[in-house]
Length: 408
Ligand code: NIG
Ligand code: FE
Image 1 (cartoon, rainbow, N blue to C red):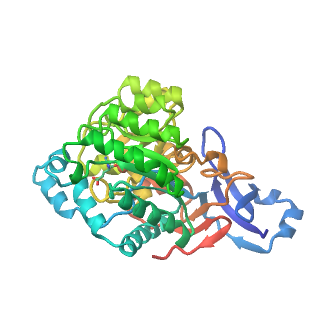
Image 2 (image 1 turned 180 degrees about the vertical axis):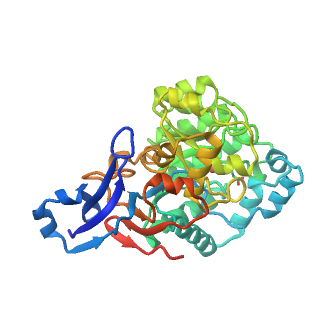
Image 3 (image 1 turned 30 degrees about the horizontal axis):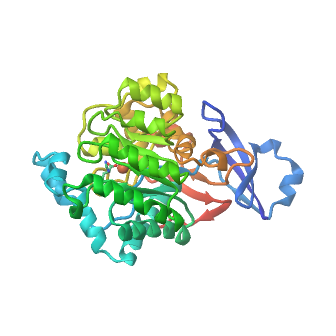
């Protein structure tokens, strides 16, 4: 395997339980897809340097782990700009959903789109994320809502990782909304979702299972049935929990050892305690909070006090968070949710890896043995990248020890 030497970067490794893991004027040695060595440039062992086939001068750039966007709905067709206008005129997200718009309108557009259209859309979005340092991405289904269309969307998600140099984890979100053909028959739809699951998993399309537990989504009892089906297949679960109201979904998810509970604006003390006990990650989504003009803040102080790891994600989707900027999400997590810049970075690296069950595979931090996924930035320190917004500071993206093209 080829050994490469990357010299003169200022590295935030996030390899310890707290702090930036800061290494000034550092060198990184990669072997194949892994990091072999990281430390002060002047301490670089000569025998290691001698094995390198290539030496790259990072020129004093700031280096971080590649970003991990652990919650996206990247595969869909159409847009919801008209719905945005209606919401600005006073209609609420729930009213639009109950009137048959919202998620259902994206389902109609997604069902009508051919696979190549869906793939081109998803690839364009993934490239935009890569241009901001993303090397690992979670993609949920949930705009197909029939066995065939969910399979199509999950297959497109898998295809993204074949076409682009990016790691993709797929999540089956059949229980996202009730499709029109099941109107008034939510329990029958949940039966269908549970019946599709082993077949989709058998096709290798499912890494995790998610549901939307909400007044306009599925009840806790229905969510439980989805989770039981996942557990029977040995699949980990995640949950869209307490986004618009407190359904105590996080307590339920924790009972199933959920990897993460996401959104969480209305999370109560019972949910915080249950997540802490289960070791579930809290994935905060400032894009959806902002775009839906929410005012109820997630209980960040309580989550922090309970030791629940905090992650962040774009939640990219056409209805509640049409953003493709992880750096903007970090900035908004600090300004809106009062995270520290260090917490924001951990949220898109080490804790995001945990929310996807990828920590053991060396994603999300930089240390010997970890994946050689890293980004070089035009900044003196990562906190500058959280402070600025709407800028394009990425200099280079390295995934699996190789430079990847981030023009899009
Ligand atoms: O994460 N909350 C449910 N699902 C998405 C929104 C989906 C949509 O509006 O199309 C979310 O916010
Ligand atoms: Fe979401």
